[in-house]
Image 1 (cartoon, rainbow, N blue to C red):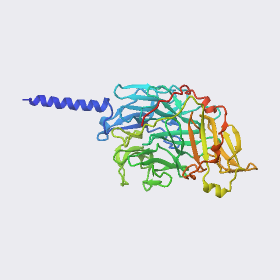
Image 2: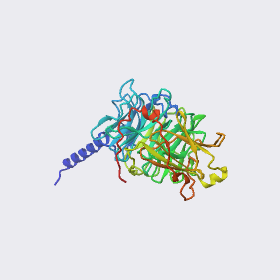
Image 3: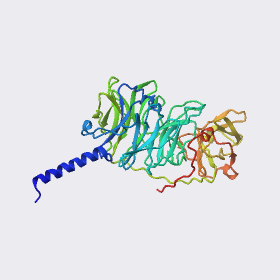
Image 4: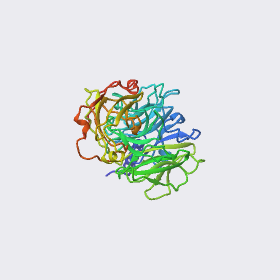
Length: 479
């Protein structure tokens, strides 16, 4: 028979074990990972997207929402500043942007909860931020390119968990940031053209091997994206944005993965207050960083589906609380996408098929000329086929655009958005609409009856000056 004292001792030991696990082990099912920023720091929402200098003395903490103050743990005590937390899909690792010492540049770090060790993923002389895990544990992150002529270009990079095989996956003159992973395995990210002129950010998507980049969602013209766009289990995508002329007037937007261009919905627009970041949980609710007035600090709140009034999760009178990430069950585990790249090749192929409706409207003929444009200007021009199609082969990882001009050199269509191909990639474009919603007639385009037009130009300055262009091997994933 077990004595009463032994039972009490067992209960005490179990309680101590659970408490130890909650504070030193992998985050428990209900824990929330948060960026904590001292109240005196500026909270300019626009400036905080890519300029992390306003996030001085920030820390990444974890809490149990049932008892935040007594379960609060600082996860980045050895860092002078840390932001942008993201958990692996098994909740065993945390990636973030951090500065270990005064004067450091933002770099990507990984914390292993089991060993309690941090690993430095990047060793760059340029700022890196906004990391996120791929389902195979590799890491996607943003890094300034640092070109003296175009210092506002930000590329996406990919790295192994140990910080090896670091290579860029975007090659256009854009600022790319706020990456997240869709259920289909693609990377979704905010992308803002910075050359030849600045444009409002759009949400693009591409495969982890850098292929098939294209428009996924276009923001309403007067809004600027603030937070990562995140998908829930119901294939709804959520993000926060603010008005370009008034960054305190922010809202939560929602659109459908299956119909992104026609399903935009504004959530909680009747609420008074400001939203910073949003995270959908596995139950269909939203956990957000929010404040009800400018005189208050950002706190963590839960917005239950269909209920306008937020439920406080955790607030602190001394800190802004931003970028909530939930441990435990994830809304989904993304697919691991395979790759078909061929690194024995240094070019890729593009086929452009003009839509029949577009041809009729513009009365286009083979007399029209296709111009290929690079970051330094016109590269090559050649006649389009009679059906408006063209077929080109060009250097991989080189950003180009194309446009259509008449005999007088007047632009009829375009220029297109910037795009590139990876080694051995074959891409197709259907018409001039960036949304690529029009399906061309099912026939062989005239252009591919001939050899592709060769656009053999040197690699772009973006690719040539990348300090991480050091390993072209590509791990092949399985579905």
